[in-house]
Length: 107
Length: 120
Image (tube, rainbow over all chains, first blue to last red; front, side, top):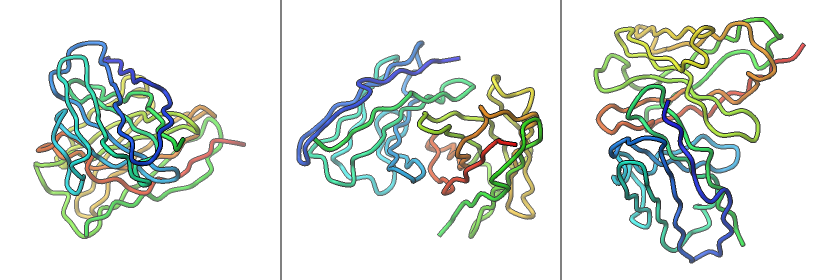
């Protein structure tokens, strides 16, 4: 099983600032990684697939990068709707596994 | 607009079986482009993938739950279902059904989630 880790666990950010979230896999997963955003009380929403492709309707301020074991999600100029939990997920091998998440909250 | 919606009891007794159904509205499940999956989230915790099923019935399971899980699909009803046997309090969670888009390789459509509590 591929274990996913994320850092930091929590990030306090002011609206308009940029952030970088990290995700690491315990073994190489090529670019087989997705990023999701979850607001409180809501289901997760797909942001990025295949490591760097934005899902439908996702604005350009979200950028995914990385391959192998190290991945990054960069959000430029955070908007109020961007706060919440961010998860990475690998689909390179079964079972699919998620990272523990990074909480982005308002400073 | 395509929608997924979970249904099932919100309270299950310990040692019994949790049964949930997910209905896909405004679309067909008869597609080679998607798997259909169940994912759960325990209170204050992260996401855990449980199992996925293809429209032809091919299945994949999380080994940590494999011995207790059944997943099935009924394309004529546009539904897929989850059964989790011998539940304990550790199975208390929000259960989501989701569509795994094979062209993207991501869960691109999610139900709103249903809370299941295991308690006597």
